[in-house]
Image 1 (cartoon, rainbow, N blue to C red):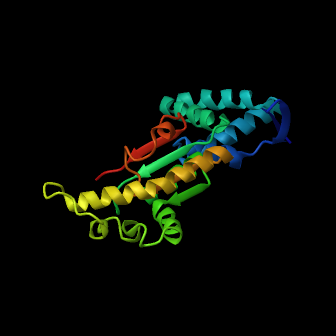
Image 2: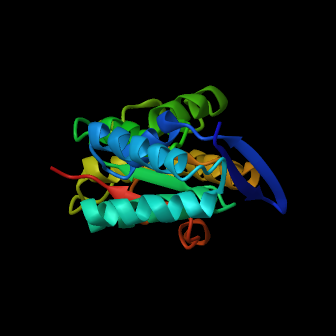
Length: 222
């Protein structure tokens, strides 16, 4: 059995070398699944041939990068970037916005799979929770769909303003309070999460949150 040594918070741990785990890691770096398994198998074979029964994570990574650079330098770079994300203690908060049908849910799933982020939430779910807390009388806009929120505006916008856009803006402003709460909780608990949905709009999330290096926002468009 080949054991891999890794250090975590000053303590050294060992675990069996796994081609399956290594293959999944390489796939997250955009390597073809069959090629990922081939490289994992080659690394295991090299270790066995050289009678290596214990190896550090750093040495494994060096062997992987050497092979990946011969295959595709970009994939090698992706792999190293993925490792940087995995090694950081700070959680990764990804905000993914876009109109309905643009593919935010599909992209979120792919990101979560590749980066190993287990927590995902749609802004519609956040809005639904807020609806249970905030009455329709207090905030009628949040109880409407974001696309017809203008119908619930207490005060109609001036004629020169687009009423649909004004309603959407009011709707997003309200739901953003819930989004900010999820971000703050994730940061406090150290949980990486993807928040996706139509309510993720630049300029609506608090500046102090968006200025954090580990809080990233992307907006998809057709």
